Length: 99
Image (cartoon, rainbow, N blue to C red; front, side, top):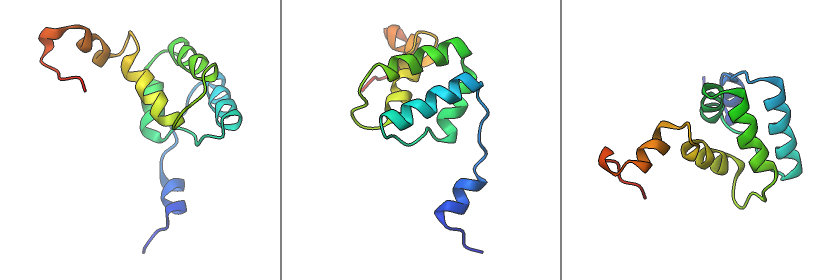
C-alpha cells in the first residue's frame, strides 16, 4: 500500500511537550505564519527542561523568523548553553569542525 504525504505525517508519532510550550509553538506558528517543528525537533525540545524550552521560544517569539521556524529552533537548540554541541564549540580541543 502506497501512502501519501498526509498519511505519513499522521503516522508520525507526535512528541508530547508541556502545554505551555505547545501554546507558545502554536502562537509563533500563527503570528509568523510558520509550520510547526517536526518530530525530531520536538524530541530535542522534550530533552531539555521546560524552562529552557520556554526561554528559546520566548527568544523566537521576540524575533522575526527570516527563513523557517524549524531552522531557527534547530540553531538555537544547538547553540544553547546546555547543549552538548555548544560546549564542544567553545572547546577547541574537542576535534569538531564548526562551519
